[in-house]
Length: 434
Ligand SMILES: Nc1ncnc2c1ncn2[C@@H]1O[C@H](COP(=O)(O)OP(=O)(O)OP(=O)(O)O)[C@@H](O)[C@H]1O
Ligand SMILES: [Mg+2]
Image (cartoon, protein in one colour):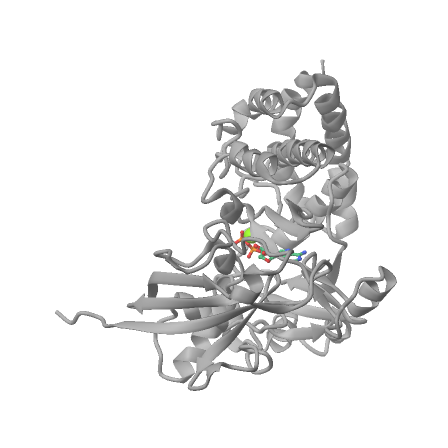
C-alpha cells in the first residue's frame, strides 16, 4: 500500500481595510496536508496584530493570544472564505490542466480570486524571502469570473434577439465551457458602477425554477421586515439570473458618501463568519442565540438581534425553507461586534414533509415548528405580544407570494406545488395569533 506523504504549506493572513479598521497583517497558518486534506493546522497571530486596540479573534477557535497553536483542521472563518462548490469546480479544472487531480483544503482557500473572496481576509504565500508581497490570486484566478452588469444585460438582449440560445449565452458569460453542465449552481462576481454584486445562475439539473423562487423569497423577506440585500433578476432567454448586492463589501463611492476612511484601499471589506463557524458546528437556532447573547454589545443591540433571529426563523417556517443549514446564515462584523447579516439563500421546498436542517429548540419536523417557535420565543425572552407582531408581519408578507411570483416571471405551472408547501404551514402559524 502506498502511504500518501504529508506536505506543509505556510499561508500569511492579512486583513483588508474594513469600515472600522485599517488593513494590516493578522498572522500565519501552517497547513499540513495528507491526501489533499488538511490534517494539521497551526496558527499564530502577528505580534503587531495582537498589539492593535481593535484586534479580535479572527475565528472562534483562535482567541487573540501569543504563540502558535495546533488546530487539527482549517479554522471555520477560513472555510467560510474558501471557494464554494462552484468555485471548487473551477479550481479543480485549473489544477487538472496542470496535471493535479485532487483539490486540497488549501487550494479551495487560495484558488479563489482575492477580489471575490467572502469576508475581509487576504492571503499571501510563503516565498524564499518570507511572506510574499502580492495577494494570492489577485489577478490570475478568475474564480469566479467577474462580469459587468452590462455584460449580463447584453447577453439578455442577444438572446431576446434570437442571436444565441440562453444556454450558450450563459456558458459564454461564465467562461466555463461544459463545466456549466454539471451540478453546482454557478456564481459570478458582478460589478456595477464600482459596487460588488453576486450573480447566481441556474443549475441545469434544477428540478424547479430555484433562482426565481429565491428571488421571490428575498422580496417576501424584505416585506416581512427582514434585512435583505438589494435583489434583481436578469432574464437570459428562459433562464433567470439572480443578482444581489454583496453585503460584505462597501464600494468606493458608498464609503466616501458614508465618510468612511478607506486608507487608499477604495473598496472596503466586511469580516464575515457563517453561523456554522460562529456556533462551532451548532445544529439548533438556540446555538445561534447563544452566540448573540455572548457577544459584547449593548443590551438593546442584543435584544434587537434576538428578535431579528426569531423573525428569520418564523419566516423560514412560513415559506417552508428547509435548506436552512447554518452556512446559510451569517454574521458581519461592524462597530466591534458580530451582527446577523442580511438574509440569503432562502427558498421554499416543494417537499412538504422534509425536516428542516437546523432545529428549533430540538424540533426539525415541519409540523411541530409552530409550537417550537413559541418555545423559542420563551428561550429568547421575547414577549408574546412582540413575537405575535413579528409573526403578523411575516404572514402578511408571505400571503402575497403569488403576486410576487408573477412579477418575477415564475411559470404558473410551478404554483401548485409551492401553494401546497407554503399553504400547509399557514394554518398552524395563524393559530399562534388566535
Ligand atoms: N448578498 C451576498 N453578499 C455577500 N456574500 C453572499 C451573498 N449571498 C451569498 N453570499 C455568500 O456566498 C455563499 C454562497 O451563496 P448561497 O448560499 O446563496 O449559494 P448556494 O450555492 O446556493 O449555497 P447552498 O450550497 O447552501 O445551496 C454564501 O454562503 C455566502 O457566504
Ligand atoms: Mg448556501
